[in-house]
Structure formats: C-alpha cells, structure tokens
Length: 575
Ligand SMILES: *[C@@H]1O[C@H](CO)[C@@H](O)[C@H](O)[C@H]1NC(C)=O
Ligand SMILES: *[C@@H]1O[C@H](CO)[C@@H](O)[C@H](O)[C@H]1NC(C)=O
Ligand SMILES: *[C@@H]1O[C@H](CO)[C@@H](O)[C@H](O)[C@H]1NC(C)=O
Image (cartoon, rainbow, N blue to C red; front, side, top):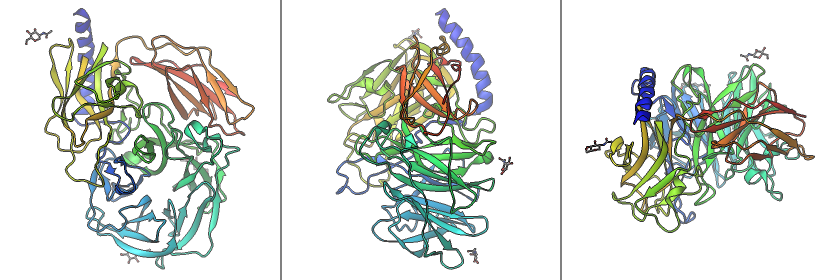
C-alpha cells in the first residue's frame, strides 16, 4: 500500500499543476481525428462497408474553419480546429466528390472537386453553415485532385494532378470573367523517383515494378514564397506523405525542398500523413492536415490527421509528426499548441481479458499498436467488455477508443449512429469505479478520444459496452495514455547509419535496450533540423528508403517506454 500512497502524493501535486491549466476543457487531441466519418457510398461498387475520410481541404472563413473531405456527402465545421460538427448542406452537387479543394475569396468559400466523369463547376457560398451553394460552370473537365488558388493580386489558378505519368499541371483562371481558364496548360513538376527515395511506390517504398503517384496539390503562400505541396506515392501505404516545391511565382519555376518529405508518418499505430492542406489556425499557427491509412476492408479506408506546421528561419516548411498519434496540445492552447503532451502509452502489450471473442480476432489485438489488427466480440450487446491490466500503476491522462468496422453493412451518411459505453477503473481488479461515463452519449465517435478532467492512478481499465451501431462490436486499439513511475530508458548507444550504394536507402541500427517499448528515429538536413521521424516498436533497426540522393543527412535516435523518452543519441552525419 505504501507504493499507492506515494503515487497518490505524486498525483496530488500533479493534479494541482494540471487543473490550473485545463479548467475542465479538453486541451489536447490525438490523431486520427475523431469525427463522424462517412461510410462508403456505393454499396454496389464497394461490396465492403467501411468508413473513410481522406484528402482534407481545410479553409479558414470568417475566423472559423470548414473541412471538405473526399466522398463525405457534406463537410465539417469548427471554431477551434478541435471540435468538428458535420454540416449537411442545403444544396450539394457532388455526393461522390473526390479530393476537393476550397478557397476563401471575396468573403465566400469557393469549392471545387475532381470529377473524372463530367464537367466541373466552382461552387461558392457566403453561408457555408447553411450550404446554399451556387455553381459557376467551368470549361474544364477530367481534372483529378484540383487545387484552386487565388493570389493577393486577384490572379486565380487551377492546379491538378493524380497520376503516375503526368506532372502537376496548372491553368490560370480569369476571376473577372466567370473563372475562364487559360488555353495554355503549364506543367510544374513530376516525381523523380531516381533521386527522391520517398516518392517510390509500395509499403515502405518497396514496390520495384509500379511507379509512384503524384497527387493532391495544395499551394500555400508564405513570406512571398509559394509552397506547392504534393502527395506521393500512394494513399494505402504507411509511407504516404507530402513533399513541397517552392517558387517565387505560382507557375514556377519550382525547386525541390531539400527536407522532403515534409509530412511523413510511417511508423506507430496509424501510418500516413499525405494528401492534405495547410491552414492558419488560432494564434496564427499553421496546421497541416493529411490522410492516414487504415486499409483493412479496402485500400481506401482512411482517417484524417493534423500536425503543427512551421516555416523555419531558412524558409523550410515542415510538420512535426513525432509521436504524431499520441496526445498533443490543441490549437487553442496558446504557447503549447501542437506540442507533444509527454503522455506515453501505458497499455502497450499489456495483458487483456474479454467477455468473448469471435473467430480469430483476439482481445490482445487492442494493445498491439497496429490499426490493422482488431478484436471482435461475439455480440454487440451490453454484456460485452474488455479489460487491460496495466501491471504497473500509472497516472492515466487520456484514453482513445478506435472502433473497427467488421462487416458493418452500413453505407453512406447515416444519421443517428452513436456509441455508448463506460470506462471503469480499479487499483486491485476487484473494486471498480467509473472513469468515463458515456452511457448517455448519442454521438458517433469512431475514434473517440477522452482527456480526463482529473488524471487518475489506476492499474486496471475496463471498457464496458452499452451500444455500438454496427452488427459486431470491434475495436482495433484501446489506447491508455499517461505516465508511469518507473525509469525512463537510457540514451541509445552504438547508433550506426550505413547509406547504401543506392543513396536513397540507408540501414540504421542501434543497441537494443531493456525496459523499452520502442525508438524514435529522427533525421534531417542539419543537426538542428531533425524534422523527420519514424517510430519503431521493439526492433533495433530501420531500413529507411526515403532519402534524396544529393542530400547530406543527420541522424539521432531516442528510446521510449511508458515512463518517458530518453535523451537523444549523439547526432551522426552521413554524406
Ligand atoms: C466580390 O463580391 C461583390 C459582392 O458580391 C461583387 O460585387 C464583386 O464583383 C466581387 N469581386 C470579385 C473580384 O469577384
Ligand atoms: C522572409 O524572407 C526574407 C528573404 O526572402 C528573409 O530575409 C526573412 O527573414 C523572411 N521572413 C520570415 C518571417 O521568415
Ligand atoms: C472494496 O470494496 C469493499 C466493499 O465496498 C470494501 O469493503 C473494501 O474496503 C474495498 N477495498 C478496497 C481495496 O478499496
């Protein structure tokens, strides 16, 4: 018991500090974003039912935010980039809209979407909450992944591209004359896989046959420089990310950014950070949105993520995806927005018991940090539960419940979906109390994330199902975040980087450590610009195939467990 007393004291001091910051408001978020993702629309084509959100175009309008997402039958609204509510617009033209773009212009939101089947329109409204969209027909068609950009001087541009053959292309539009497009088409740039390792197709860039796709252009103007973002190599892969080219003019010439990819999250629970958009959030901070792959039911099963974005003093754009699916401070938390909370994963590979399991979908799948494995209970009723023994006492700060669609048989945007449950906790496995009460939740929360008002010291956590909208209760991961009281791993030793003859590839190795969940490999183009990272659970090596051949790199590694993160290993330079 003395250990519990000690822990309680730590908790007391901790709470005192913590509550003074939070005031009962959620101050953190955790990727993937927890919104009511739309189910696949066409049950004739998609014989599998799955929900998906991808290719987010987020636009600021009258100090609020609107998020347009592929095939969603509407869009989302937020005042803080944290809480999103779905809008079913009064008028909507393209229910099957792919990879949309949006732009704030002349006190209206303008919207365009890819439509391979027919002609295109620019839709606009000055009341997106109502959604009385009006259309301006465009003399353009067959544009995949469009991006509409109107410069400060009033000149308008349409960019597009989604191809493993054609480059990102552009036309100018005449904003004074119904957005009439120029006759001329401008070619901006294409993938260059022989030089840029990260543009190669396949899981971990491993496909030696097929070529990568260039897609999803999005232009951001910062400090009189144009940052043309583009996605590669394919949405279903762990390595789907965004790169950037810069120019002094929207039509180029464009120069490859030396720190590409700028949005990249290949390791950990959720993978992928590509095909997104960049928006200025609260407190004038930039945020980059992207798509993460679930890709179990079908390749196109995805979720949305957001990461804090910076332009450094040398004008390099980068996003911080480090611990990018762990809790981070929300965009409204001034001074901390986007920062990692330091709350580690207390549930990783801990022992799990459940009321039942169906087929071979075992309970332990919910603690393996792999979105592609999941637990399925025999039924979806209120007799179903699953319990994790954290073994060590930890301070629990937040919990994320990622539901999985196992033969859900739901199609389209269905109103009235919701999840009801209780999270109970215990310190002895006998006496339980309610930690999170969602018995009266009537919201659809497929990736529910709950930050506790008061962090709690617990050992056992139990999810008790009340209601799910799907025929089976299935959870891919139930993730418990907080802080353990044990030792943080020590600094990683013997970090070795071997760059291959093919300079796009390097093998990174280091000494395995006891008492460690994983490692975060960091790299970049200068010792103080280690902007890229890759989370590696358990293994003490990483085959990195995303380097640019002409670039020198610097590497470090940090080790982590449930108690925190080690000091970084000494930085190593490779030519
Ligand atoms: C902006 O909107 C106003 C009012 O609707 C309109 O009169 C004006 O022509 C618009 N300007 C441009 C550049 O489209
Ligand atoms: C903007 O760019 C100029 C050079 O083009 C540079 O001197 C200045 O520091 C940049 N400003 C910011 C805020 O990055
Ligand atoms: C558990 O609950 C029982 C009955 O309420 C109580 O007598 C006992 O003291 C509790 N044990 C602990 C460790 O809290």
